[in-house]
Length: 610
Ligand SMILES: Cc1cc2nc3c(=O)[nH]c(=O)nc-3n(C[C@H](O)[C@H](O)[C@H](O)COP(=O)(O)OP(=O)(O)OC[C@H]3O[C@@H](n4cnc5c(N)ncnc54)[C@H](O)[C@@H]3O)c2cc1C
Ligand SMILES: *[C@@H]1O[C@H](CO)[C@@H](O)[C@H](O)[C@H]1NC(C)=O
Image (cartoon, rainbow, N blue to C red; front, side):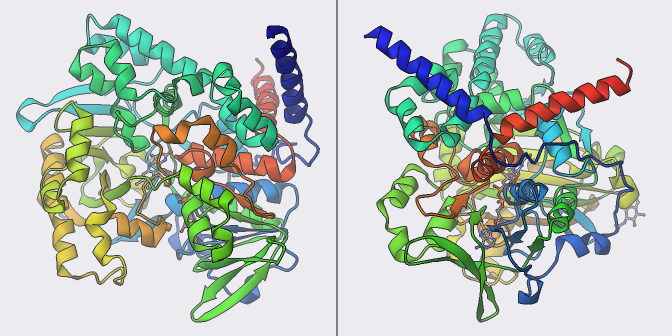
């Protein structure tokens, strides 16, 4: 019996290796495409010529190879990969500028970004960095945050405890140990588990790349769990694992604080998802030099060079299907007119719910295979963002290139439960968890762009239903009650911020406004105001889900990219693009990126005379 299992396993491994290593399509990472650094462009009008190209039927290139719905990094990233191998791609974006969560906007002279506060894993020799350099022609630069890069603040105003979080494989645990003497064993064991889980994530990508029957075989035989510690630990909640390690309540909190980066309270968070985030920032944290708009700004020209286009104010109304249920294009609403555009494949970056529930005809939406995928996913938590424009430099305001996670208590499960399930008036008066960052302090070009000014970004969660009644009102005219509710959140959050940052005072505030879940629906197309797309709770980490929700959809010529087909975050959405690109180009682009990283590293090392 065991012998035959062993033979099957060996056969399977050989098959996996054959499939994974022998790419047949063209390789977008064939050669190093980085160009010498050009002068940065700060002029907003110049940048808008790239980022804000409005949709017109006449601007649609002829003989398209693909249409991508949505210009988030999952859409643009994929478009660049396809452009690199000569494909002509049209990216359609509903908002008035490209970028999705990476877009920026300006109010009263302050530039704010939306969904990029810090990104990890960007050491120059890492494959992720190499891949990003390639898809931006080496023009997108990354500025490291301070170390400590995060600060955890726990407790009420009269008893706030402050724990700095350092990056560094050794420094991270060593500094924690200084804060929690006597807890060395717990911290070491936590690190061991986190790293071991992080190393097992390859199987998640593989389940989406292997032919479906092989992926299902791995899942239903239980091999997926045997092969990867990632899936072994996935059903265990963060609370469960951490509570076994230590009795210290503050340490428990500090080992779980980063749940805000994927949005599930520790008792619903998968230890595996959490481990990915911890390892993501273990070697440091970075911010895009020049702000988040630089990301799309350096990707779009590559798409255009191959004959493609990125057009905004282009809400896709529906995906077009032949009688044989094959996608052959999309339609875009231009005012009252519906304009049809054809292409041999359609890839959606708009998220699984928008794609399946809004863009498919009813009969296709009802297909059991589509319904099965929908039943495996749910809408994630809604986001609340407060944008603050300040009169003063970072020095005058005491702001740094770092983030603060501020909690009123150390029992996060309880805090989140009470807050999210509370009545909106009550929750607005005491927001128990808050992320605070200063994008301007992280960007070395800021002082030159906006001398004497600063920005802060404050982020928390919010229940979509608190705001749902105003969802159909015009975005800038939602009435007094809506404004009052927003103001209640702003006032409460501001009080916390001014307490933790004493140099930030009311008289310094030149601009302040809040974005609610319905704001996210309008600007980033999040159907329930989700901050990170589909929910990342424990259910998301069932191996069956990852073998089922993959770039191929049950409908021919329709594919998915971005955060819902992989995981959330800038890196997660790009992994979605790489995975989708692998399927479309019939080769493993994850490995191609690693191969090029090794090659260019070698070149760089040689140049330096090492
Ligand atoms: C407030 C906030 C803070 C964050 N902070 C960080 C961080 O610090 N670090 C990090 O790594 N990640 C962060 N994230 C998460 C990260 O930004 C996202 O996970 C990632 O960028 C998602 O990329 P995406 O391409 O999958 O989707 P999106 O960027 O959401 O792109 C989807 C696009 O599709 C468009 N669309 C939808 N429907 C249609 C339609 N019918 N027609 C045309 N277009 C359509 C939308 O307008 C949108 O532009 C944050 C997110 C938010 C909201
Ligand atoms: C900003 O602060 C400076 C003094 O620090 C003051 O002179 C100036 O008027 C302020 N600007 C605004 C717009 O409030």
